[in-house]
Image (cartoon, rainbow, N blue to C red; front, side, top):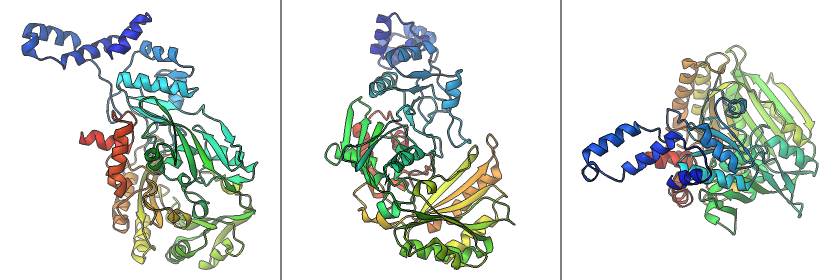
Length: 510
C-alpha cells in the first residue's frame, strides 16, 4: 500500500483519509505496545479510529472507497469505472437471479487486456477481491461481489473464425445467441447450452451442457485454448501444450477462479441438417411411466437425441410432465416419444439448429436453486419421491428438471479434465421462483426440503454451473480432483484475489 500512496502523491492525487488510516493500521501490526510506548501507542490508536479495511466477498458490510481513489484507477485505464450513485453502476450490478442484490466497491469495464492488467494491479495493491461478470447468469450471483471489484467483460464482443475454418476465437462478453448466430452463417456449431442469454465463457468453465453434448461433448471438451490473465498480471495462452495444469483446471472447475479469461478458442463441428425439436406434455398423473421411459432412452438412446424432462411451475390442477427434445436422426423421431403414454400434447416441428437454440426463458424472477447428480437409471423410488415432492410445492412457485448426460460426455476420461461427472446420467435441479424482492419462506423451504428428500438418490456431488452457494462442501463440486485444484489455485492465485468455491474454502480453512 505504501507504493500505491507514494505513486498517488507523486501524481498530486488527493490521498483518501481512509487509505492513510489503513496504512497506519498496517504499521501498527508490526510493533507492540512495549516497544512503542503506551502513551504514544494510545494516541496513535485513537487517531486511527478503526479504519475501514478492504472487505472480501463474504463480508456483510460494504467497504467504502473514496471516489477520488477510484478516479485514480479511471485515469490509468481506457475503460470505465462505475461507483455507487451512477446509473451504470445500478444497471451493471444486476444479475439474472433477482433474489441477489450485491454491492461491489466499483464495477470496471475494461477495453483491453492492458486495462485488465492495471485493474488486477490495483486490486493487488488494495487487497481487494475480484469477481468477473460475463452475462451474470450464475444462480448465486457470484459474478458481482460484495465489497470488491467487478470486472465487467461486456466489451469483449469479438468473434473470429480462425484461418483453418475449423476453430473460432470468442470474446468473454459473447453470449450463446451471439456465437450461434455467427456460426450459423458458416454452417458450423460449438456445443453450447440452450439458454440464449448465458455467457459462453462462464458456462464453458463449469462444463456446458446442451443439445449437442451427447454427440460432441461438453462445451469445455471442445476448447482448444484459453487466453488468461492471472493474479500476477501475466497474460498466458493456456492449451494442451502450455500451462497444462491450468488447461486441465479451467475445463470444469467453474467460475473465473484462476484469473480473467479474455477469449476462448473452440473447435468447430458441422451444423446439423434440418432437425426435429419441440415439447411433448402429458398430465402429471402420467409422469410415472414417462420418467421410466425417459430414463431408458437417455441411457440407451442415440447420441443424436437430447431430451430434458421437467415438471414446470404451475397450479396443482394444471401440472404436467414435459419432455423438451432435439433429434437429428430420422430413425429416432421425437414423435416416437408421444407413444410413451396417451393424451400427449405435441408441439414438434422440423427446424434449423439455431431455432432450437432460441428458447425463451423467463426473466425477472427471484430464483432458489438446488441440484444433485444421479448415476445410473432413475429408480422407481426416485420417481415416486419426485412426484410426492411436487405435490407439496406452492402453486406456480417451483419445478423439478432433469438434464441428461451420457453419450460423448462419457468418452472423456474422468481425470482428463476437472469435470467430475463423466460417469453420471442426470443432473436433477429443484427450483423455486418468486417475484423479485419478495422473500417467500414457504417456497425456499420447499426447495430445501425437496433437496433433502431427493439427496439419498444423488451421489453427493453437484454441477459446478449450478452453484450451491457458500455452505456446500468443496468436495461436492470436485470430488477426487479437490486437492489438485486447491494446489493449482494456490500456485496461480496465492492471495485468493479471484472469488469462487476454491477461494471460499481456502479462506475458511486458513
